[in-house]
Image (cartoon, rainbow, N blue to C red; front, side):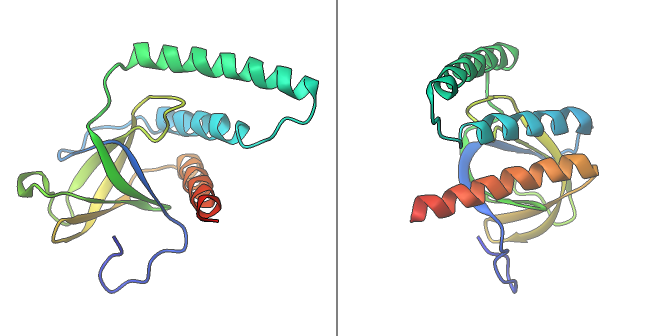
Length: 171
């Protein structure tokens, strides 16, 4: 999935997530998307620490109960995913994915809305505005547009953590 004439970016991760590309750009509440990304980052990074004593185990059980409550609340708020599971490459500045259907392939320069569920811990749909930067055969590459600094920072944290997890998994 590396774009033509470019070296692969240093920071990226491949994952399978519910995903859809909405060909007509729609208004996105970037503040809400930033809050969702920050919540996902907080929940997922909390699970990376290992308990060392009885107090830590009790705290971990309490966090698990809160996680379950958030999960169930999120499922009632948004019961269906944005689309079927799709292999996507998360980049600090956008996404890359394969689109086999010509009718679903946007043209370069098209403004789109990317809808995905990056976390199973908090199953809410993240919507980000993007522009199609390159279309090559069945591969679509996008770059985010209209993201404020806080939302972009939260996205970078997500990509960095997933990249780090992929490296650990290969060892």
